[in-house]
Length: 162
Image (cartoon, rainbow, N blue to C red; front, side):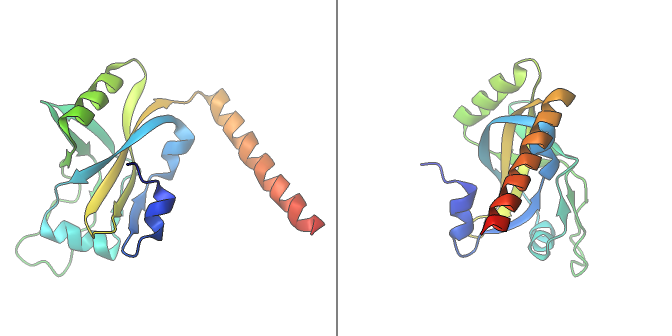
């Protein structure tokens, strides 16, 4: 059973740590997958404080494994001996079926793996939502802007009438 982001936000412990807002503007999202992520202790504590950025990162399949590359997790100052690298490669956990699905989709021309949201789920575990996406052309981006502007104008008109 797939759970939407809106339903997850209703859960008590759900917390968005980092969101890639540019992804929905620059890419057309076909479908997304929830992945686990292997983190060190100081990385988890830093995420709970809220120090991360996934805007410049991407996912890649190498040697039959899914990796998150170039994501930033701020150093945790209270960690004394076991500090982590801020921009190290982090392994993502998915089932074999999802991995083969992602691999076949990313092998198609123009498709890429884009991280969308890094969050703690209702159980308190760090999760990453990765999407199969196709890059938009500038024409498509303009159409998206027009639709968004029209929605804003429509909402303004409805508010002023009431």
